[in-house]
Image (cartoon, rainbow, N blue to C red; front, side):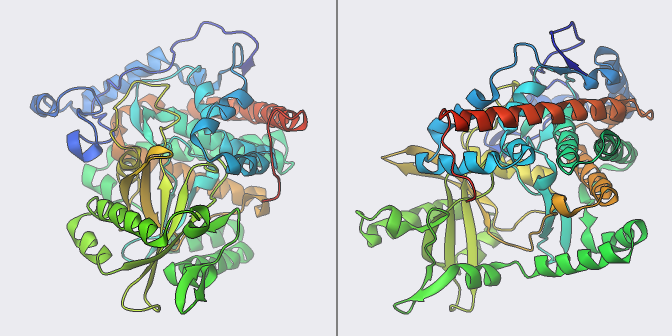
Length: 509
């Protein structure tokens, strides 16, 4: 329950990741860190015997004694920082002329505010009772950051699909971020408190049971698991009926068509016989318009150098594939809600001819909002952090996923990660879901999150901590209801700050 004062509680935010099997981002150079995420040289870790299943389970049960399951209902509001000030603290590192778009999008509703306020919630979570059961976090696991995309084998899978904030941390932070997002969405839809609770609880119950299942499974089986979208269609039909099943098939067909060819047809025009990204300021601005005083040849010479650096981050076969494409145009693109103001680029490539396109997105990676709240690894490149976390958490990842660093005399060094702009991507429009549909979606998200956490952390210890009772989902569901109400208040504070001129916002863009 929300509290007006700061009571004594079992635990504070975690410091070092000290649990067995908790090396969330791998060791040494592969993760871009000098040491493993346990803070121990990899050679020493390699000599330590692996804990047994019984030892791991005992650790999880001991953690439950330290941080009782019921404690996860607690939401501390005393001495809470001003949420608007927290958001504005991110402004200095972003493109100034894009900030009004960010605040305009966040002010549209409590749910859009929630989407953009990952830093606010991470700060709130750090004040709650927190376990030391560490895994790789998404860091921003709200319901809109799950979705459909195409695997390298060209099958549609359902999984987490945004990793800007990924970082090692306590597993329950991701669970609470997901559950609270469902409560916020259900509240915004005008549903009853009972319905809000049911949606949040469905995600957490699915997470718990999926983690229990993963704890009993062999390690390789857990690693290979994924959620095949085609297998979901009969489930949707059985659970929701023929109408939702038909609409799901239509949405999947649309997602399959979202690829580089489709992106090319939407974004590209011919100018003097050459393909060029259509200018649509401020959302899509060709590079020549942004740097009008710089010769085009100089701009593309610099981009070529950066792309060579990016290609080196790919494994050898994919580097060979990438070398068969030639960059023909680039533009800055505004993406998302919370990401608005960070730098994102659309990169247009041709293969053998204009009928052989590749469209990539280079997105700026800044420090994770989680990193300042827990003690963990230091990364030499934030783009590499994103890529390492995504590879670890996703069942399958984009073959073009890589990173690079940009050195610009005007803005300093910036880290980026690169991926395909569209590759079978699709997401659920929560406003159009009936309660039963949102509950089913919540279950899918909970299962996907558990699968990701089971790959990266100690699934046996986490499962032992959660146990077979419903106490964890009951507690997190209550937390979610309280946080949904708090989000309404925070959204009102932002709109008030816009009204009194403290924050500049441009809505509707």
